[in-house]
Image 1: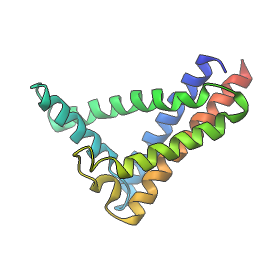
Image 2: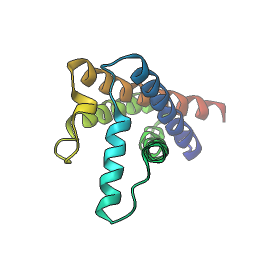
Image 3: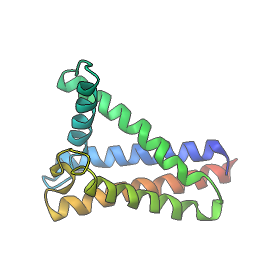
Image 4: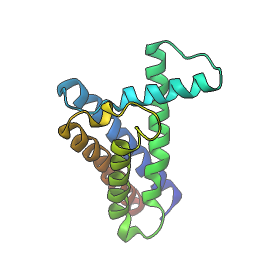
Length: 147
């Protein structure tokens, strides 16, 4: 597959993940709060290098931007390799990211509640990232077929 297809799919997957997450967290109290987890991680990182931590609103914006960039790069991997397996790769990448989002915060010294506070939260976390991966693979394949 072409690099443009992979990057386009990655961006689409990251945007889908972010839009669905932001919508779900406003509508469902059990929805994951990956925004809080990201803000904690960014704040901890900035403090560790003695950098100023922005106020909450700016920290949120910076976290959202960093999430979209990092998730775009991550999901772009789905578009690398054989086109026939791009949707499967995207789905597996999403599943892996979701499982990681549930189980990695505690070992990384972060609050696990944003992704794990209830069984529904854990399930939604895995589902959201899986949807992002599915979108990434599907869009990468679509772009590839259009060029």
